[in-house]
Length: 179
View (spheres, rainbow, N blue to C red):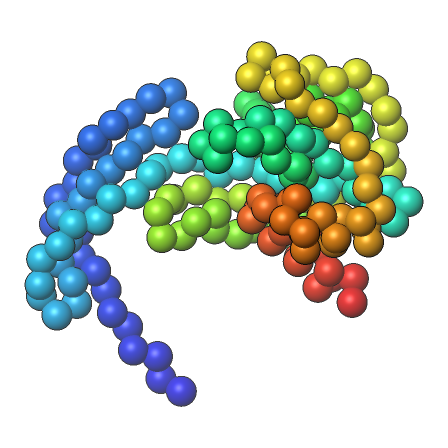
């Protein structure tokens, strides 16, 4: 099957908003048929998500998420200054949970929300866990942590308690690898 290729051409681009964590761009574009348009999107750095697995379950974190106006459970995730993605994943895991992993393995890379942002996520599986002290950022002061069995994790997804799409997508990668 031959795939039709349609390309949207960028005519111009401008930053309409910027802060320390992101920038918002608005581009003047040309659609494949030649018609003009605009496209707005967010430019953010990639982040890591860590699945701390132990005893047929996972360690989760919960914190208040301002954009959705409520607390939310997820796998530890974020960006931390590091030389490599693996080191970034180790730092995020330790900062948010206090856990250290003897084995950290990349499960895959995904686009976070490919229609609105350039941001991707790198999913790591962490095993061989040992406990230590957390080193949370000031913005994570309300963070809680808990271990859940895999069947409970799935129930939390099904009942709407876990709605973080990155965590659900990461779990899908894990499931595909373990089937």
